[in-house]
Amino acid sequence: EIAALNAAAFVDSGIFAGYVWAPAQWYVLVWLGETLASSLKLVTRTALAAGKELFLGGIGDVVTAPGLRRRGLATLALQRANRAICQELGCQYGLLFCAEHLIPFYERVGYRRVPGPTLVHLPSGIVPFPQPTMMLSCRGMPLPEGTIDLQGPPW
Image 1 (tube, rainbow, N blue to C red):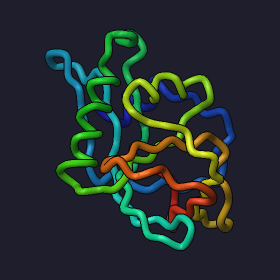
Image 2 (image 1 turned 90 degrees about the vertical axis):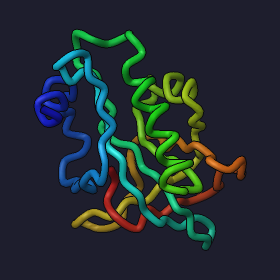
Image 3 (image 1 turned 135 degrees about the vertical axis):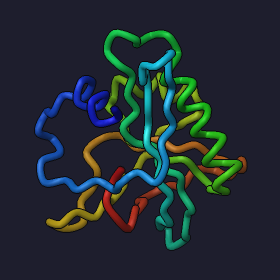
């Protein structure tokens, strides 16, 4: 059902041609009765910023079924994911990528844009991710400045 939800909601713009994505380690699912209404995937990863290791909880594939949007379902999923990242998984930061027009939405659930760039590892090499990076500080630590190397594929 997650694949069907993603297929119904995401449009392939071609911007990510040649990308390989990290598989989900966990999912946050929001159900309305027997209908999968919203979902996101979670991954953990140790990344590098300014020579320091960062233990990240990555959020990807945030999606709500087209007919069920603007009801706070993705917000519920993100709030639950934030608790998992910061409390249950013990991460230092949450990290996600988003389109420019979605920045205000993610700011409402605690994420802040970092200047980047954020480097991702693809079969073709190490490249900067083409969309904004947003991070959540789990322990009140300042967000990293400068280049972040995810040391693996994006999520």
